[in-house]
Length: 362
Image 1 (tube, rainbow, N blue to C red):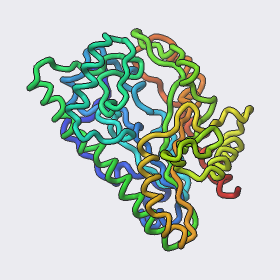
Image 2 (tube, one colour):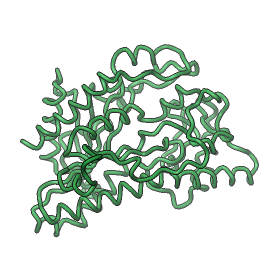
Image 3 (cartoon, rainbow, N blue to C red):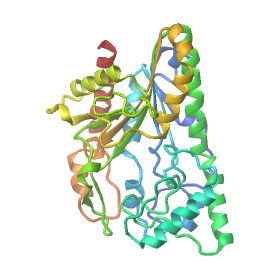
Image 4 (cartoon, one colour):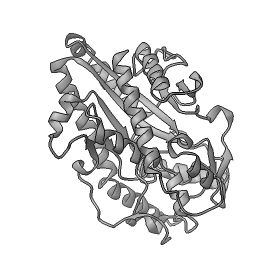
């Protein structure tokens, strides 16, 4: 357990610690919002686990499994991008999805959902595939079905587990959610006065392989679950971004999503157009769903202000974000995580900036 990367007990994050923008030493956040047109949110960027949760963790949890259960590659890349691009502001969740997943709807009954997830997991058996649909805001297993939580059988202790998760979450995850939503409203207020464009970008990564018991991240996902070679951009639509279901409308205008995809193909200098896909394998989750609902509410005011409001999810292939050397290491058994290459991080961040600059010209 000592090998895990922990947040000291009692640590509470401030909004300014998790908000990143260019020239923050000489510009105010209001000035940054006035110049920017993209708010990047990273709901799964955090990897360090709050120390209060250690008593509930499996003793078999390693640092590699800890980090693999996050979108940790997004943290360094988005911070680098936001520090050098005055057209974006970024907000990053400091807590891992283990605490609670902010890209899922917040459960009205956290204890009930967690209990259901635990019972489904127990029924399936350790390391066995289990369907946690609808109850996966707090997961007792990772995506490779490693039992990450050592759940008490005693009801009082289980209540203590849930209460600890809720209380700890407010010190980081809750700060992230409130900051993300407040920044969204500040952007909207600003852009309704000036017109133009505002995009909410939910930034993620996923690996096309999952972990084994010995820590090797080398088990291929099912073909239907594999990401393209660079990124999947999602707006809840079809493979061209058009409406898929009238009850689930696109969160980004389809033509603008296609333009954004073309900009990423050029910005990332892809070899094959299919390296950038739309709504495959993911449609996008809670962050763009909630932003899309908010933007539809604002449609009359936005039209009057000549303001385009969009929400899009970018799910990057983690192998691409980490680079070949790191991936080769992760494919081998081990308990530790990789060291990210600063030059590679900067290269990917530059490509993000280049892609959005090209999008603005299309």
